[in-house]
Structure formats: C-alpha cells, structure tokens
Image (tube, rainbow, N blue to C red; front, top):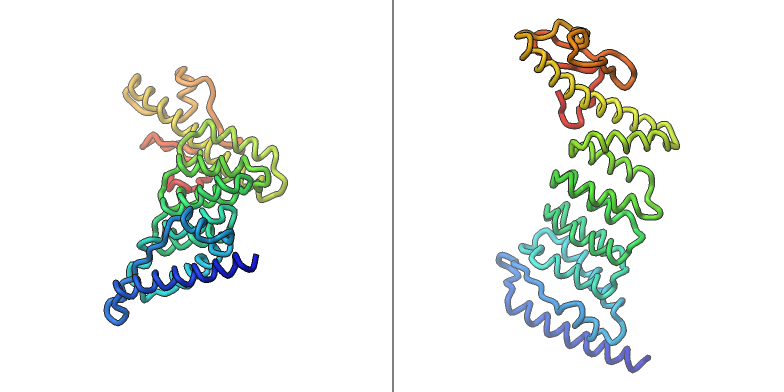
Length: 280
C-alpha cells in the first residue's frame, strides 16, 4: 500500500508539473488573464490514480470550487462540463459535485440545459434520489418554460421511494400549466383526497377551483357563440342557454356558486381567479 501511495504521489507531481507548464505557456497572468483548463478524461485519470480515484475526484472538486469562485478569470467556464463529468466519472456516487456543478452552470453560467444534463447523470447514477430529478424539473419549469420537460422530470422524482408529497403537487401544477386540464383535475382531486395537512388541501382546492373554472369557461363561451350564431344576439343570461336548449345544465364553480356572465362581451368570470397563467 505504501509503495502504491509513493508511486501515486510521484505521478501526481509529474502530471502537475506538465499541466502547470502547459498552463503557464498559454496564459498571460498580468494581461487579460485568459484561463483555459484541460484535463484527461475520467477513464484516463482513473488509470493514473492507481486505485485512489476517489481521492483524485476530491482534489479536482476542491480545486473546481476555488477556480469557479475567482471572478477575475476570463473563460473560466470553458471546460466546466468536462471538469464535472471527469469528477463524477471518477466517483459516480459523489453527490456534492452534482449539486455544486449544476448550481454554477445554472446560476452563474445561465446554461440550464447543461445543468440538467449533469443532474440527469446524477439521477442515473443515484437511482433512488428524487432531488436531482426535482431540480431538473425546476430548471425546465422556471427558466426554460418547457412544461412538458418539467412534468417529465417531476414525474420521475415523484416516483422515487422517498419523494415528499410536494413533488407530486409540482407535477400536477405543471400538467395544469401544459393546459392538460382533464388530467390535472384528476391529479388534484387525488391530491386533495390524500392531503395530510391543511397546506396540501388548500393547494389542491385552489387548483381545483381554477381548473374547473377554465374548463367551464371554455365550454360556456363556446355555447354562447353557438347561441349568437343561431339567434343573432348574445343570451341575456346563462339561464337563457338552458331555456333555448343549448345546454342541459348551468355549471357552477368548485364551491357551488354561480359564475359571473358579462352580457356585453359574452365572457365568463369566476368570483375568484388564481393568475398562475395570468389568466383573464
């Protein structure tokens, strides 16, 4: 073991000297401070580590934190994906680099797709962890505005064994944002039935109120247009739709109250509107 460690230290010093020489020969420290980082691939470093690959992963990770904390260096993001792939190739179950690397990629570089790629690598290597998929869903939802992709990752997270209940609420909300109202209504009804506290139940009730309103609004306004085509005028009230045989029953909101009908515009409103989509 001692001889292995001695060989490892010698090889590391030689490699450090080579990298430093290459670095110094291409970098003007006192001018623009352009920084370029090159490292061998993870498999190569694993061979060169002589069995100490986790130690090498630790060293590169610690160095990366220091390196990406230096805001005076230009082009410091040039090889960031390669660097964190090397670290996580050396030690695939090393959680911290996935978190830190994705945070730097997303919050400093603003490259959310790159951050998601690293998080999905974590999800593949740490199959029971829900938070990497959840974080992927958040970046897709918040910054990419890709609700289909966000729902995919929230669904993956919700299916993990220890996923907390709020993950499913995020999935259901994203389905609503995709305008899949029937499926969203079904999911939120299920969440309401299984709610374990007041917060969960109120969240479900608010979504159910808004989703039912959007479904009813669309249907009623279509019937109002049909009425106008037949009678060359808008109905005086919603009861007239029923009297004329356009609808069989007048829907009410989720609390059982009447919708507000504007005779001049033919539009339907609810007494309470949640503007998650800036819905008017």
